Image (cartoon, rainbow, N blue to C red; front, top):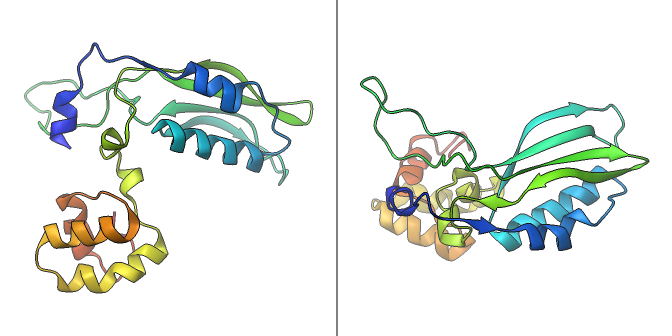
Length: 186
């Protein structure tokens, strides 16, 4: 992760406005699930990930939220440097990319957005985000023998990549080995 953190410069700028307009902006979604499917496809296509930062929930099953604000997963500010701040790599880049989706007249629409990212949007960059490395319950169960019996983290990393296509880190493997029976690894 540190190599990706170090490679990001303040000059990096990726504008995904056109892809956002085509895939999400110019559509009205009849229910939350339709919006969620479109968002997942957008994230997969553009190598991005957005997280909920603010929302108001509804009791209606079809319309789960009145509104939701999504921010880029790299959007938090980096911790300030100082004597008491532990120096370690961080995925946070203060990325300003975000959007607001709101329920209007029986459908979800985008009310505002900013698709300008201050980091690369690529598969190799997404390795910095732990959510993209996270294994499903089924993947964890299928890989349990490999995790328990391989002594080398490199062997486990390679096996996971071959079987799932996900690129995990040595720290992820260490966490998996520490809690193999609970299924709460990475």
